[in-house]
Each structure stands twice: as C-alpha cells, then as structure tokens.
Image 1 (cartoon, rainbow, N blue to C red):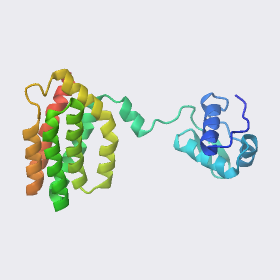
Image 2: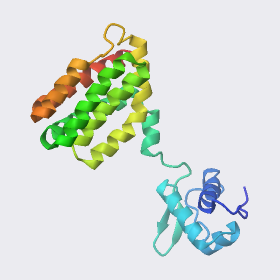
Image 3: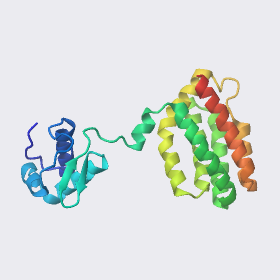
Image 4: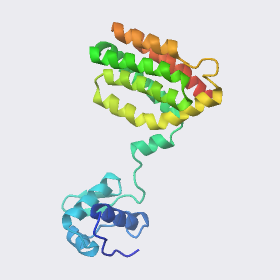
Length: 229
C-alpha cells in the first residue's frame, strides 16, 4: 500500500496507523531502514514532530528501533502484545493464581500499614458486599471486588494497586460466570462472608500473618472451583 497525505486530524494516530500498515503488511520487512523523518513528513503531509511521535509509538509496540547514527529500522512485523491484552487472553484460573500471590502480600502489608481511613473504607466495603448478597451475581461480584480493592489500597503500594486494577477486567466476568455456573449463592447468598470477615478482622487487629492466611484460604477455595469448572 503506497504512502500518501493524511487527513487533518488526528495526525499522530493516522501517521502511526499508516506506518504500521507498511510494516505489518511487510512492505517494509524486518531489517528495513525507514525513510528519514523529513522524508516521512513530506510523504505523509505532516510535521516532523508528528512523525517523531508516530515512530515513538511504533517503537513502544516493538516494531521499530532507533539506532544511534544509523536511523530507524524495522525489527518485527507483529506488534508486541501489551499487558492488558495478555490478561484478556489468559485463562481466568491462570490470572487467579497470580492474583493470589499478589493479594496475599497486599493483605499482609495492609495489616501493617492501614490507617483509620483505610479501615473505614474496608469495613464499608464489607458491608457493601453483604448488602449485595440480595442482588444479582454481577452486583455481588462487583461488591466483592470492591472489598478486595479496598484491602489492596490499604497496602499503600501504588504498584500493587495498579496491578490489581489491571487484573479486574480479566477476572470479573469469569467470576460472574462461576457464581452462576456452580450456583454458589443458591444456598449461601453471601458466599464467602466468613472468610472475608476474618480477613477484615485480621487487618483491623494488625495481624499480618492472619490476614495473609485468611485471604490465601479464601482465594484458594475459589481457584479450586475455577479449575474444576
């Protein structure tokens, strides 16, 4: 596909897409040196700053690499899959195994670092989970996730919080399906309440070992059900 002038907006996105098409379509195979910024700017009808941003985006996708003094070269014809995309493709049970490792540590940190405000948020989230036992499976799962999010937030580690946020979309629908498939709330609308209450109590008391143990057991039970489903 030949290159040509672009529409006025949004220029960076258009430039990135047009250059990506050349690479993915192997018009520019691996090893090809791309035309210089000035040449690309003239061909695409944009400024050099737009071309620079587009090349930066392609480098972030793992398609091109700038070599000092030599130029920009194609290093792959398939974009590198980002973390959210990998999570979306992963099996829910696989994601859950990693979640266990992450959240158990977060619960232990929360027991050591929680503030009065954190405890208020966690207790409120537990109450919300209990209230959601009268709602739909989606409402119950959302309330459950909100409680776990409050615990992770109490760890006061922005990296853990960001990781948990990334995990939620990959987990939510799988958990809703699991609840419905196994009828987990048929006889127990507030499924798992005792385990979550034990977790909250341990964090409130500042008992990191008990908090980790309570959450590990609660998550292990769900993981076992996911693997058997």
